[in-house]
Image (cartoon, rainbow, N blue to C red; front, side, top):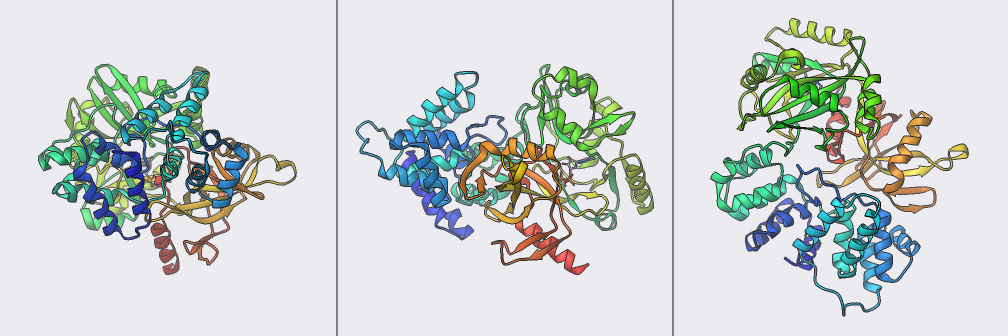
Length: 546
Ligand code: ATP
């Protein structure tokens, strides 16, 4: 498929608001595509250069894109930045600049999805000292061959902000409609394969192929998530509850097969080298080929340390050995997804738990209380807090493992603090001694269509060290600058506390936070996992009811 055709489809989708209309646009195109184009078409429409399970990252910032566009358009970088500042959208700015470039079409070739795919892989793979030059070369070639419209979507894909608002649900329905299969079958395959692109290929061959999809080692599966709720509600619903401590650390997924072990973070990035000690512990804990889900915490003198200690280890790329001694990490395993070739996610939790206990030595298996007695569960909760944990997780014993789903089957019970995870979409330069770093930040939540909607500014709660960390994380992500404000690529997730959610005409989502204060960076969360506008509406309603 030509990238120009793809760009026209993106353009049509961008001008379409209704979910059903979007579904039908995609559904009509899919059956006409060649086999090799299908997975790329799906992934790129969702703004994802690689399968969701893949640790590959394109890893280029706005400046590299701007330099390449400047080169191709015969301008300097300042002209590109000025155009981005004017339009507020790097995609439109690139389109505008490419439209003005001198006639170069003599040498330009049409771009196809597969060529773009090859270049994305090249960008993700280049490392070492020569890498920037190599990346620049690839980017110049890409933009050199791009028409203005293609430039719009190429820039947005490279910068991780496609803005056409097609969500996973819409895509699932489009795949099902295109190939005449049940959306539930598509969802089933998606949970195990963690790549809608590949799922679409399978859907072409029919429903049986979708139901036959299994989890594979070294292709991490999205983590199952929890909602807030109450013991009473779950007891009423399920009769009994499986309760565990809620460990305040970092989620992991451990894969072992054929003697090779790999560790993945909650964002499904490979972290094997950051925590080799934990990998060795888990390797020794089981003779099986296996995929385990758990939380790793930092401990000192038998008590858990705050979450930041674990993050420090995850962030650290060098000098791991010296750090191992300072911070002891302990894994707590609470689920099993796959063992010796068998996918277990459809089994009820009680069954999975039995398989977990049979396959792994109990040293690292999170203790569990199964009970129908509210007082007994309350006692466990108190003990969890006394021992320094965050609270408890209660789980429906009948529940399958639902990757990526934040449902009622897992519920977190912890002391009521109103905190919220949001993504940084802007920042403002500080003043005085902080003039060279950012001093306040614009935070956004997730809209229904995958866009980011501003909700609040936060300027308090930061230590000097935290501000430095924020600056280090954001400075390469700046998209545009206007006066003291910068707009940044939505990549960095932070947790903030607040007193109240208010209705507000100042923000497009209609809500704002009262007294927001910074609590911590959440490197372990991806921007897709932050609070949605819908969840904020729910919080607002619950707050009003209180
Ligand atoms: P929070 O911000 O409250 O930590 P979260 O947004 O990180 O929550 P949730 O889905 O709300 O994620 O809570 C589940 C998280 O709690 C899991 O992702 C995991 O990291 C952690 N956790 C700790 N102990 C357990 C446990 N026993 N079972 C499942 N998850 C646990």
